[in-house]
Length: 257
Image (cartoon, rainbow, N blue to C red; front, side):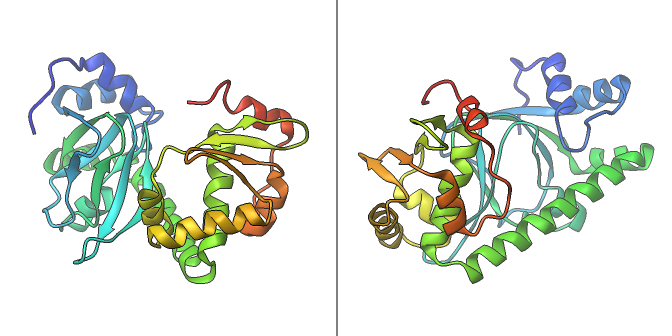
């Protein structure tokens, strides 16, 4: 990996300060890490690392969005997670001293900084407090993957789709009308969404149709989805998290992307 001269140490320090592992670490430590870390720019669709490669370092996402996937021999993929600014990538592979356990692909233009494996190990020896951060990170990943397994095993595709729509509506939806209705723009194709839901394009398309027939959603073309009642969609999806009130939904975004 070649360093990117356009990314200053100041930019790297800001990114590290927002990361899972280095958040709340002393300024002198952040400067030290920024000094020997490398940066890389990615275009949409570019692979950062592959599940077939030996793990070479830990990455911190500076900006953009990347997806972690496992791919089958016939080309199908299951999305394990979506990672954004502040996320730490490849910690499992580095500390397992093996290959990357997934392939990481940029869904948007993105930037990451890399800390080589040997440097990461030295940091942990010199600053044991980092190990506690890593332990928390790995525990969160175990919980996330346990929830993913539960979703894939115990929920049908329509319920998974409802959960996905509910989640993105909470993240970046726009309040629609009265009550707790919400409109959100879909940024993924049906094929990309199928990868996240553990299904195929045709089944996901049928699931969209069924949710619309049940009046849980309204479709405006291929991209805009209106959810008339967030609570009803939440109940159908089996999502147990508390639903924010209408004002909070409205504040999630000021306009459609």
